[in-house]
Amino acid sequence: MTTAYLNGEYLPLTEARISPMDRGFLFGDGIYEVIPCHQGKPIGFDAHMSRMREGLAALDIHSGMTPSDWLEVVTALLEKNTSFIPSGYIGVYLHVSRGADTRRFHAYPKDISPTLFAFAFELAPPPTPDINKVRPLKVSLAQDKRWQRCNIKSTSLLGNVMHYQHSHQTGLDETILYNASNEITEASSCNVFAVIDGKVVTPPLDHQLLPGITRQIALKALPEAGIECHERVLTLEELKGADEVWLTSASKEISPVVEIEGQMVADGRPGKRWLQALQAFNQVKFSA
Ligand code: PDD
Image 1 (cartoon, rainbow, N blue to C red):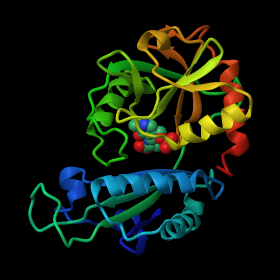
Image 2 (tube, rainbow, N blue to C red):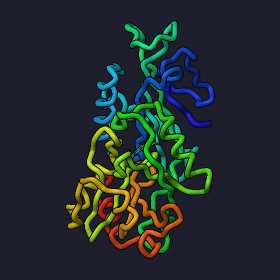
Image 3 (cartoon, rainbow, N blue to C red):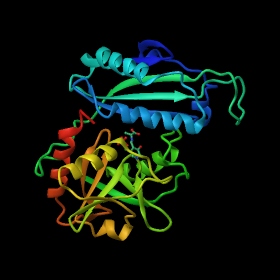
């Protein structure tokens, strides 16, 4: 049984209990992070901490935890769970909800303690940097129906869950989302990149998408490796005609998409730019 962390204690995950009056449960009133760790090493820890701090500030939640407190939790969970997850590919989920109240009332209550929760789980192995061996992704498309604050990594994920289910129930890997102006925002649990005329394009950060840490690391690593990148509006039409499409996230790193709504992306095979991008990402990921 894997070990989890709850409000200062380590305990078997199945024994972790919270109140049904927790606002995370009642309202999705909380912030979370997923930190990918390979062979005991977290990837992008500081960036995950910055994003978490910004999310908590946006919701006016005070976790009382410093980045070094969280690093202690992450390190302890990696140690305690190594034998349960022999592959060494571990995601550490961190969660802060506003805490449990005595009544259900929308306004933020004063004087309640946040609920701090973390657990470790097995990540799928990262993509193999080989055009012939990588598992390519097939995706669907949908108009983005989520809220206007998608830059906050909130635990209110029903919009994302419904969009993800849309592709999952037909055996696809993800749903790429576009807004009312037919501009790509992101996917239900990943950021989106495309290669157009040899240049890498990804939508700019705003309220419509999560500032992904994998995206951030990629946008630093790729130009350093000589790959031109542009953060700009990416239209649905451009995506459909792109030479390559990739999804990025903690678990997928940079993964190639070969089919969108049953139509092949270019020749239907992972592209050369993807391979260069993943190699550039792999060079820096542990120092990012
Ligand atoms: N998903 N966009 C959304 C909506 C996401 O949920 C995620 C991450 C990303 C990529 O962010 P990052 O590169 O920091 O993982 C983009 C996580 C892994 C999840 O919810 O499980």
